[in-house]
Length: 190
Length: 147
Image 1 (cartoon, rainbow over the protein chains, first blue to last red):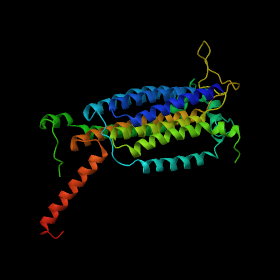
Image 2 (cartoon, rainbow over the protein chains, first blue to last red):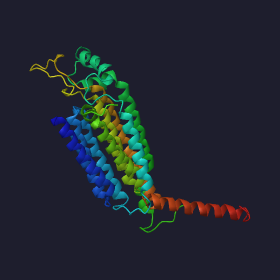
Image 3 (cartoon, rainbow over the protein chains, first blue to last red):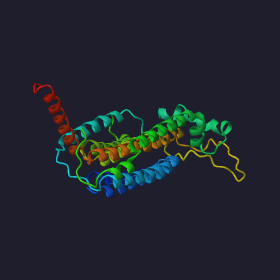
Image 4 (cartoon, each protein chain N blue to C red):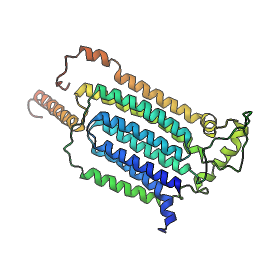
């Protein structure tokens, strides 16, 4: 019961943060609120027994992402220009998608059900055998580094590719900035 | 379909996460600022993570870490109920990949701003249209005004 209460409270704070993000016009506030959002998410992960995920989310989501976004607003703009386009079609799209997703959850097993299909297939083997096979106290570590090591290798490949992409996009930025004439509306290059 | 209290309480978590996911989706679709779109995409992504983690949660379970005794010896104790560690592993990977893609998106925003001096979608569409009209005019005049 208390767990449900904690979950719902944290969740309401998350939704309040997300709605505030959608209404803010200063990008600095948006970035800071996204950091708050990540920390609240980390708390919710702790409540859901995923302590490793909470660590990662707090370090990566609230730390690195916030720094990257701050760098981006320093290089681009500080405020959002108010949009003039109509908001009805996005709202309809969002509500229809949400309704379809909620319809999709009707067949799901109850939250926390120990006999749900997700809990009876490979989970018992991982938990029973990881002590004798891997001998690491944290089962998440054992699975991440040993049973499913190839996942982590694929992850490394993705991160490497993204790093190359960022370097290719941003290399020479400072050089071009120094060469360019001082600020003013630029002609779009044809 | 039975709408009793147990069903509603058991599915409440999924619905809450879907609401959060839709708020993120709304930001992506309705807001014109590119950085805001990235933040909305992050919210959407985090909601998916929560959905996965809540699938792995078992009522009365605990974090999947074996307790060690004073000598550091660990032993499997069947009387302790552990939550499912597999979704945690998958989401750990997904968080890191998510940050990699976010940084790529942010780099694209910086590059767009450098090229067009704007990070608002409406203005970028305008600039693109102006470029297309200029292009058409140029090609048309080289065709003798007939294109």
